[in-house]
Image 1 (cartoon, rainbow, N blue to C red):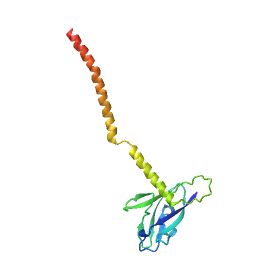
Image 2: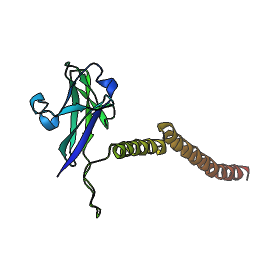
Image 3: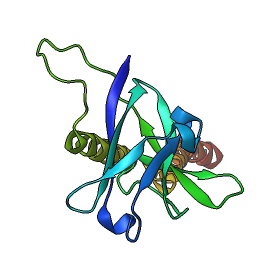
Image 4: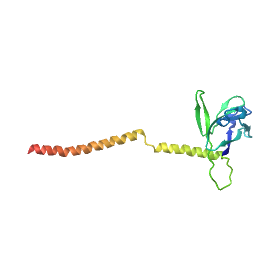
Length: 167
């Protein structure tokens, strides 16, 4: 199933240009098949396109002056081998079963919230994970406990041996 996804470039990203195109995996990076972004009253550019739910795509914007720019609010960025640039990444969310009759168009504010939640979750997981130093400290502590127990076991034997020698 396809979902309508809106892409936006802020005015400062397109300064001095009169147009921009959205290129990516979804149109084989072909400018002839690329959606043209339309200029908004605030100077930004915007377009919408249908993308398959559950799929991940790489994309970038091509300005009419030949300059490539990235989406300032992309979910992620991946390096392009040999080109020293990063592509933007988007994963189109699956449409949840809903009894309300709402549009399938994702809200950009909601997408940003989901992105923040993912970042927070990964940060929380990282914080909960023990550091390598903490893990190394545990075996050392258990060895110390083991050697103390062994020493306490040896002492009675040594005293028994000393007692036998005295007799």
